[in-house]
Length: 114
Length: 110
Figure 1 (tube, chains in turn red, cyan):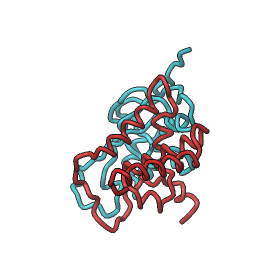
Figure 2 (figure 1 turned 180 degrees about the vertical axis):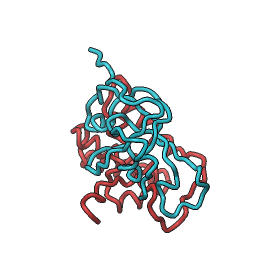
Figure 3 (figure 1 turned 30 degrees about the vertical axis):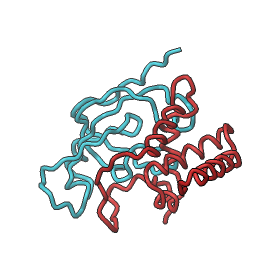
Figure 4 (figure 1 turned 60 degrees about the vertical axis):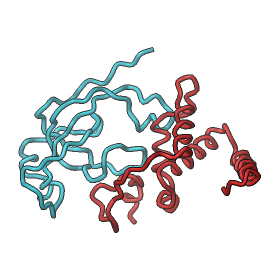
């Protein structure tokens, strides 16, 4: 990959050859997907303005290609929000990890696998 | 404090070339259209600059976003559609340079 090509965003695939057809099927949004959307809107909100749409898109599109390929649309949003919140010093990776552990334990107790 | 939008540099019908820039950053101009010549087909309105907004700024001053029309046969060497097929891409003012109708006629593949 040339240095120039390495500047090409993960999303900027117009004209590239792909191995498979793009999956254009729609699905009903799950509760967790709606929650990710809601979280992002709260972070964008005019009274908070933690970050803007372009910072968010940039954070998504500059994810390393292995992560970008591995995770789906809303999972990428989650990774991008995490990256921005940590980058801006609002949360630490340790705080997020501790919360995830706490939520997993709570779900296990309730008999929900997570 | 308000910041006035940058003056609109192009009008409908003007031949333009998309800047052949491949620098790093939050660039919204599709990769495959950079360096190509087309014709301004319309204006969408003044919008902030996402390149600086992505760095946490306000993206001011606003600048025009244009509809720029390209010939499909001009973009893809193996295009199998009709010769008259066109593609319209939204491109912001600072990504465009003035071009000539001769350049548009000569096309992008020659």
